[in-house]
Image (tube, rainbow, N blue to C red; front, side):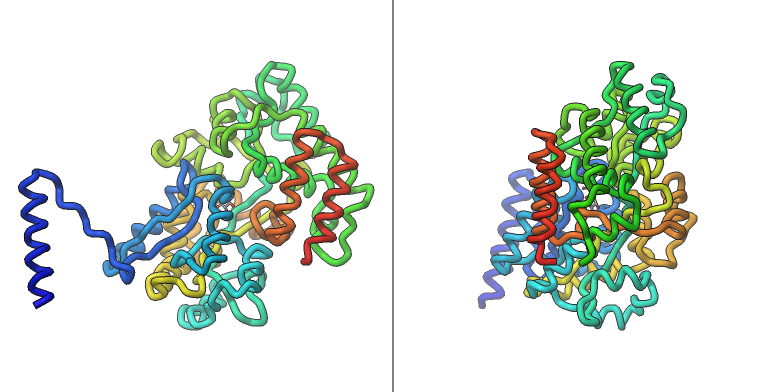
Length: 423
Ligand code: GAL
């Protein structure tokens, strides 16, 4: 009886909508079909890759509906806070993007994630990913996420025409060369170094720290032997102050800062390689610019031979409303086809070792080579080396420094942040 009533109501609804001349609305997917995928990939240079992986997911899983729960704001500025409150309230999305390394370890120890060993066994994923990466997403032999890519943080993007006009021959390779080039650009009246909101300055900070300290000393900062009070750190912070003095007015996010470079308003920006897809992808997904002519890149000054890495990885939160749908998403994210659909458009290289390298061109081909050769260092801002509390404390310290560039004060705050990190 009840079923018949539902059928009559549905028929009436169709009649009403077709009589009113409006298109019949697609019914809301039920809780079982919806797969809510949480990320912050919304804008130009961010959304294209996700769209490609979504298309593949929908093709392979006609029974599920992809629900894009992305929250705007580069580096998850807004998204991460919302995610934390959702997890706190035990109302997780079906799957969310997090960073391999210390950030993910935080979710694991808080008991928010399900181990994925069953998936790693079924899909033989232990062989697909580099062992050091699997280590970053594991605790006591349990593996907690599916890394979909490797991004690079320490990239100096520049406008070759603006460098030429300022008499700068080629990308600066050291911090003194960088300061010299920034000064020359300033003398031409253009913005030497474009920045966005506070997190982009922390992003710049990690590159300067690495470039000034060198890889060994930088990597030591995240171990028990760290010395944040050293003269070397003081020197790095002094370099940071000098570089910061060359920045333009802060833009609303990383894209408008990168656009200043593309438009020739600014010479340089230090940003992760999601900027590549922003510069390069066709209009709609990016600016449609030409590599090497409209924009160019190099390792950020002082960091040649070192790859400052981060990895976006998808998780299975405990209590995911649609666990089966989330696992279906993870399978796509883990697959060669999924990674090769996503990464060429995202500006990243695949986390898998068996990707089709012919798909990775221009910057991406260069970067694949670097990844295979370089020493590694982990990103601060993008969750690798510092847990969330520590990262937030570093952000606060850098935020204060932007308004009042007092090197001694910044060093004191960083020493304290490391001491209180509990890591
Ligand atoms: C990073 C993330 C990248 C990219 C970037 C800018 O944290 O790992 O995939 O989205 O933020 O938003």
